[in-house]
Length: 270
Ligand SMILES: CC(C)(COP(=O)(O)OP(=O)(O)OC[C@H]1O[C@@H](n2cnc3c(N)ncnc32)[C@H](O)[C@@H]1OP(=O)(O)O)[C@@H](O)C(=O)NCCC(=O)NCCS
Image (cartoon, rainbow, N blue to C red):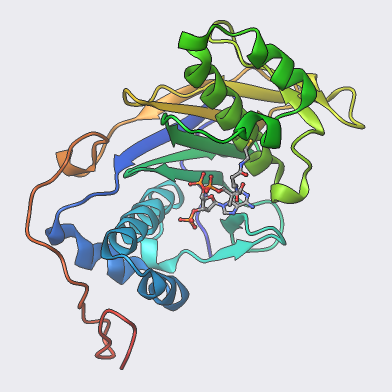
């Protein structure tokens, strides 16, 4: 049974950020908190770095959520909606809502005990394809067209992360057509959901917020607050400096081979 969660409240969304490149020493603890399905998923990553980053993401996600609920990380169980969005398993409204995003070695987790939420972080990187033409709505493309060239990349990623955070909060995944809603793309003022097809009051119901992220990244949070004002509250009580985004940890190459009580190796073989 889940305990009563540590309160966050209606006025806040908690935000946690950490580096996914962790020292070898913490991996066994993270692995031991994972479910068999997560362990199997970790084993399916082809690249070692991706596998270790997945473990660092899931393990820390479990530890943080367990902290809110007052239960050991290992005891948490996740369920998934039809589009893959994870939530805490159980009947009725979950005690906390959460959403995770990761990009290039950094993880961001948003947690709320009131609102359905989504989060997205992206590393700003140049590209050649017409991504805006492919993913953005006509109104967003028009707004982007007015942005001076030197500011284009940041504006593009603001739009992308706001859209992605909204899609993730909404829960319908990419079954929600990306041209069925518009977000603001400006750098100043509070970001906004400007339109959602078929839901004229959506801009009042939803809030978008800029994430403060390390240099070279852009991030956003979306929450269905039904008009309540809400502020991001950055949580920084990491267990060790190695968790901090931007801190790269030098160390030996880590091979996954942890005892799981059943003599499994890295690939989950017995
Ligand atoms: C899967 C998706 C939810 C996010 O993909 P992403 O940007 O590659 O990944 P992020 O790092 O932001 O988020 C991944 C995490 O979100 C969560 N997640 C997975 N499916 C989700 C869904 N349908 N809704 C919300 N959250 C979801 C999981 O915790 C996942 O973490 P895990 O991979 O460690 O299990 C989905 O939106 C997607 O495939 N996007 C592709 C990109 C795209 O077309 N974006 C258009 C924006 S304009």
